[in-house]
Structure formats: structure tokens, C-alpha cells
Image (cartoon, rainbow, N blue to C red):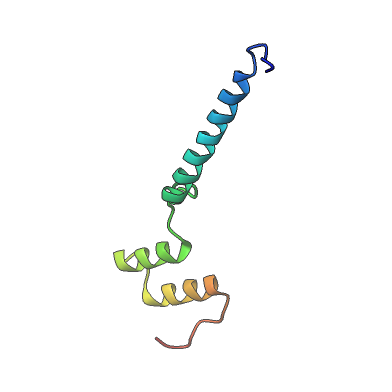
Length: 77
């Protein structure tokens, strides 16, 4: 039976840390994925909130929403 020089166990430790680090990173990204983009609302959500607060008139809202969606605004509400 051959015996190693006793330094091979370092690789086992390195691989174990890498394995568990990868598992923890995958679980974190799966459950906290929203933290990656900062949880910021979309432009449409901001526009809806501004209308709800009364910061925009309905005409302004329709015009801005149409611009976001890339189409011409409707003539009437």
C-alpha cells in the first residue's frame, strides 16, 4: 500500500469548500434573486404609481404609457 506525503488532504478541503460554496450560492440566488436587480420597480409601475398619487393627469399618463409601449396614444380615454 502506498502512502502519500500527508499534503494531499489540502485538496480535499479546497474541493469541499468549493462544493459547499457553490451550493450556498445557488440556493441564495434561487431564493433571493430579486436582490440582484435591487428590487426596483419597472417604468410602468412607476408611471402607474404617479397616476395613483395624482402627480399625472390622465392625458399625461396615456401619452407616457404609449411612449413606453412604443405606440401612438389613443385620441380619447
